Structure formats: structure tokens, C-alpha cells
Image 1 (cartoon, one colour):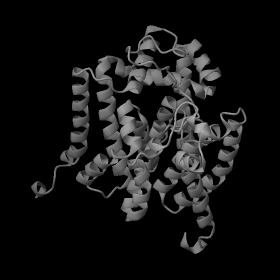
Image 2 (cartoon, rainbow, N blue to C red; image 1 turned 120 degrees about the vertical axis):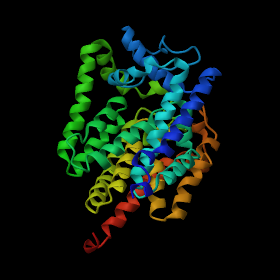
Image 3 (cartoon, one colour; image 1 turned 90 degrees about the vertical axis):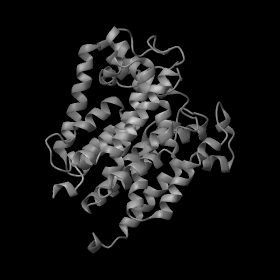
Image 4 (cartoon, rainbow, N blue to C red; image 1 turned 180 degrees about the vertical axis):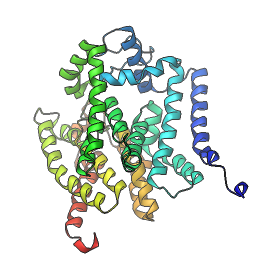
Length: 387
């Protein structure tokens, strides 16, 4: 009576249909010569620059970029290698390819966050997630935030959780593209998966070492200059940098002591964060533990653009799965309403903010920091017998 059950290979069709639709939009944008996906253009240009043997870490834009994009390559050297397949894609179609992969990644994140959800429900939540500012901005820019988030969640919550010998590898790959996922190596250590943490670190190290052999000058330049220069990717005091460093930059008018203070605050917040990760993991709340690590990373990173905050998607899915509808609505409302886009910003505008603008303009940072402290305090009061 197997005919009464849906075929296993058809369960994925809603996610595949969404990815196909995203790719179709990308093809249309290519044929109509729309200028979409500046960041995806940088990914392809970085790989092409590496293959041509040209300098990768220059102050100016790369010569391999299309004329409408003027951005530097800000990623680790191994990212250029991992972006190499994009060279095979026509420049105007790269946005569509990255967009389709992002939709698949988003669907995977929703499914991993709510295992019992049906695939049609996953597709519905995936579409609904596009109402959130971090999600639609990620796709519009051609960013890879959704793809990296999917790699980390699949690794930590599925592959590593099953005790696979491949646990940690995807975390290492994600960190080789953007350094922020390195924090999940610490997550693996604090949750007792030291072998997976070592594999993640080894994957990251091998990929970077390979680039020292392939492009030694650029590799040295990145690790001695570019990696420690956050201004390469824009004004760090801009409202859309929702990190502790961005908040301190706005408050101090980018005083040189702002970043050290931001790092000190981040170190203090790391204490309740580690406490929560360990407690949640021991209690079987693996997704909650991952979210604590992810949001801590967003706080302590020197630059966390608003589109990096795609981690709000698994948070909302978690709240919905627990039927915390009002809390989910409270979290989603400012993101759907693009709250920070409504606050005056740009140039030196942030330096003249009053109290209201300061609170609203740092909303992501303030809410996350306060929530970490409140949750840790609640855990301290939790009776041991309830664990």
C-alpha cells in the first residue's frame, strides 16, 4: 500500500519550487539587464581576480567587477577559492544563482528549526520570511548570509548531533568564507563536541594554508592588513552596523577607544552567553543554544550589518513552534516595519541623535544584550530539579 504514501522524492518539491522561482527571477533580471546583487558580483569578481593572478586586496574596486559595482573584496583568501564556481556563471546571472541557493538555505533553516513541520508549511514560512528586512535585503544584495546560516545549522544541529565523522566541516567552510562563524567552534567545544571543534578548526586552517600556497602575497596582506581594517567595508558608525562596535562608534563619534570598549562589553556579555549555551544544550534545547551563540556573534563582531541578522528567522520559527505567537509578533514587527530604516542616518547624522533616535537606532543591539542578561538571570533562578 505504498501508493497511499507520498513518495519521498516528492517531499522536497515546495522548497525546490521556491528555488526554481528565485532562479527564474534571476534569469529575468539577467535578460532585462537589471543591476541587482552588488555583493554577489563581488564574489564572482574576487574568484576571477584570483584566477587571473591580479591583486585581490586593494583599496579600490576590483577591475573584474561590472561597471556599476564599486566595492572592494573584503573576505578571507579562501573565500575567493570557494567562490570559483561562480566564474562559470554569466555576470548578470550570478545574482539569480546565489538567490536560488539562498532560498534553499532558508528553507533548510526553517525545516531544521521545526523538524515536525510539513514541507508545504516550510515553504509557507520560507515565503513569509521575505517580509523580514534582513532576509529581503540579503537576497536583494546577493549576500550569502542565508547560505552560511544553513551550513552552520545543518552542521551543528544535524551532522554533528548525529555523531558523524563529518561534524564540524561545514562550520569550518563557513568560517573560511566569513570569519564570524568561527564562534561556532567555541560553541562545539562548550557543548562537549571537541572532535567536531577540531575538525572545524582544521578545515578552516587547511583552506587558509592552501591560499598561502596559491596566492601568498594576498594571503599575507589579508591577515596583516585587511582583516583588521573594518573600515574597508564602509563607515562602521552607520546605523546599519548593528553591533556593539557600531553602537559605540555612533555614541563616541568613532573615537579610537570605542572599539576596545565594545570588545570589553562583548567579553562581559560572553559570560552569560556561555552559561546559557551550556544550560540549554544540557537540557536538550540545542536550537536555543545555537541562537545564543549566533546573536552573541552579531553583538561582538566589529561589523554586523542589518542583513547579517538573518538569525532572527530560526528564532521566530522556534517561537512559533512553541506557540509563543505574541512574542514572535513582537520580534517580527520592527523587522517587517524596517524600523531602523526609518531613523535618520547617513554621513554624520548618527552623531546628532537624541535619546529616542539613539534607542531606536541601536534597537537590535540593545534588545539582544538585555535579553541575554535577562535569560541568564532567569536560568540562575531556575530550580535544579527542573533541568
